[in-house]
Amino acid sequence: MNPIDLRSDTVTRPTPAMRQAMAEAEVGDDCYGEDPTVNRLEQTAAEIMGKEAALFVPSGTMGNLTALLTHTRPGEALLLDAESHIYYYEQGGLAAFAGLLPVFWDTPNGCPSPDFVRSMLHRNPRMYPPVGLVALENTHNRRGGCVITPEEIAAVHAVTQEAGVPLHLDGARIFNAAVALGIHVREIARHVETLSFCLSKGLGAPVGSLLAGPAVFIDRARRVRRRLGGAMRQAGVLAAAGLIALTEMPKRLHEDHENARLLARRLAEIPELGVQPERVQTNILVVRTERLGISAEEVAARLRERGVLVTVYGPTTIRFVTHHDVSREQVLLAAERAVALFRELLSSRSG
Ligand SMILES: Cc1ncc(COP(=O)(O)O)c(C=O)c1O
View 1 (cartoon, protein in one colour):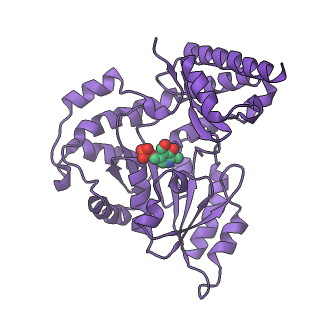
View 2 (cartoon, helix red, strand yellow):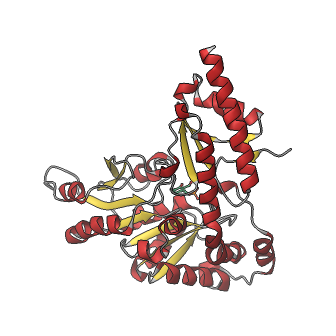
View 3 (cartoon, rainbow, N blue to C red):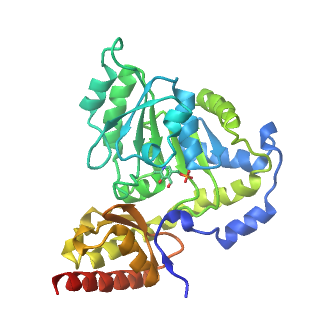
């Protein structure tokens, strides 16, 4: 029996419609700008996000790195959240390739106060490295898939605009944010200069992300992408799946959010886990395991034995992510198995 894989929404496989579109894709050499399917994907993405242009990149990591390299110069500071993906999971690209110094805020939903941003943007330039870029993340992965509202972003943007510093959004899961807020993604994207977002997470495409922003920025970013080795040739094969991800798949993301809430409600039956279902806004649920009496690694291993896969997030945290390839029934079954395991662990502790 296949395990129920709740490690990440990146484990989704292309749908039959995506596979068919990939097989039939019209292609050309994208380095010559001649792949019609890539061109269509980039134009569609720019239109959806309300930006002048967009660039197809192999991964969210390359989308973010391309943005950092295009916006900034080595030695500048990058202002971002302490729990951000760019800092945690992108192999230090911000330092290794872009030569940036990370400077953090640390807030419950990953959005800084405008006052904090203002204070950082106006530090004495004779003493401190200037801030070259401010980066937000929406939804926020390590903070449990939480959402930042357009109003919160607009307040930060007012401050960055005043200082002439660009604002970038790691919008890997921007469609999840828009669905949770009941708004169009453009309402979020309009308050940042540039954003990257992923086709290969909740939207189910096998590969690919986009970086969107002003046309002059994207022209420069296209050269940076090539420098990074991210310029591809007949990439229309991938873009064909990406177009379906972009235009068809956001419609069903609410199902993933409902399933995450169902899971949270079941797990909340065990108060020791500290789950608050009302705080689950999208498809990610982070659970604290310290009161179960074994490490998160071990909790994950025991869940695996029972056919449920989760990600270890820290010494005492595990993450569940709902997605296209797990049904409501599978989520309920996973919840039942997890609750049974957690009850056993708690009773063996008290016994
Ligand atoms: C918030 C966020 N940003 C960026 C990325 C990077 O995407 P990729 O794995 O395609 O490089 C991820 C991947 O999980 C993510 O969660």
